[in-house]
Length: 83
Image 1: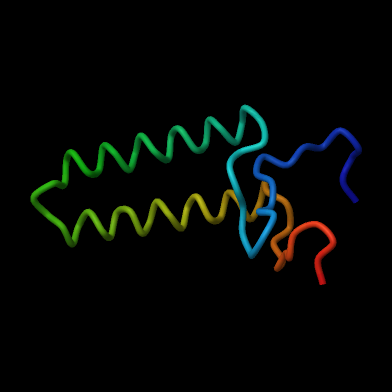
Image 2: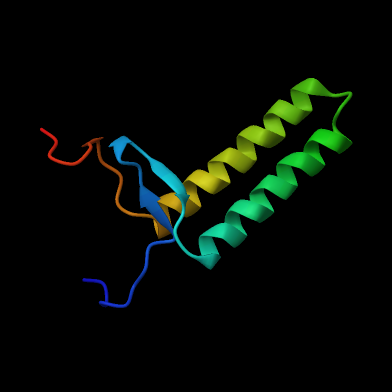
């Protein structure tokens, strides 16, 4: 059971499975750092496509794990009044 004042860093998407944009400053900070790391990897690894793809893959897994830990529980959503 989570306390009442607990806030998810990432809200679930309205439709489908996964998370949308961040919900609070902590989520925005995680997203900004992730984006900065992806951009930095793009600049530093511009001539090494395979290494860049591997780096983005690892960063994506990291963001996924943070969303899994700090976001709303994932499940398939059909929107308001769904099935």
